[in-house]
Length: 467
Image (cartoon, rainbow, N blue to C red; front, top):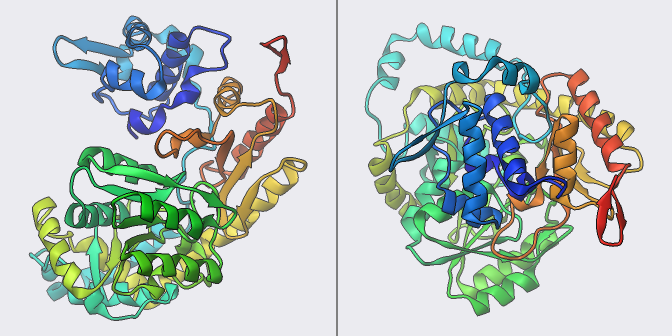
């Protein structure tokens, strides 16, 4: 987990202490909790200051505190780096090194994946010819058998089932990189929801692409706002998550998908569709890409619905595009290492994949029931098959202030600005990940703290905040 993903304007605290101190405390907590590895380079002071909207001197003072605490070390001409935990004074570790309850990270829950993996490895070990095959060079687009399994999997989203339209990737993020590096050039714009996937934002920065935030409603991206943007900006690319959008939990109706597809066709756009979270649904709606088979790139993976270490994903697109993506694959990693796709293929072929994801749905149902009970009276949005909750904060709460209060109480959440695109202000909302806590007890405790904090907002008196 990088500092780019961990540190946001929520790190500025609630205004009750200097900004540099709040930033230092947030950085220290990330280091002590093991969320950032030893040796990680802290963001350049100027970059972090610009991102947080503070002065470079403020960030410099925060870094100086980390150095004093033994958490970081400055290298002349090379920046500031995280130090090994053994360098941290024992007094600091015993005082602060208590892991908060994580309701921030979106990670798959633990099921029978390890057992299923052992069975798959045992079966593979009995096939000497196949073992040699998965240790050999393969086509950039993947072994045909793995592509066939991918095509079979993508049929759950209404796709064609044609293996010639499917390419194997190291997960959806890798697939997104392959697509963008092929179709987009530095300086070009990509239209996306006003709150969008942080991984897209990281890629856009590294590729010098401009992201344009599109207005959304309870179903996600609106056709009217997409139409206006398509007329206003010189772009051909749209990235969206029509089903179980992260973080808002929105899902487009069939009618909305038809309306979005009509705008895409009218303006000759290309859609990059993220259906990663949709994989948890037993019967997902047809992908937007089914209306746009020649103008779409469907991305799927198992990281959010099964196990983050199963770095296997698929792109479905017109075959002419796949040959171009292959060049990007060759430049990045030559090919996808066949061993993990072989595991995914076996699970798809035997039905084990469906069984494992059904376990995720069952745990999601259980955790949602707990959330509905504990958070009674709190307005939030979710989906019966989605382990994320989107909470618009009541007045007078502000997202950064609320997240800071929660951190002080020992709970982490994601604020809306973590997903914000462009300069438009993010809503005063937070996302809860019900799948993050390792067990039900931690989940219940975290939600109880959340409820207690949200029910006790600060009092604003003559422009000042008090508690």
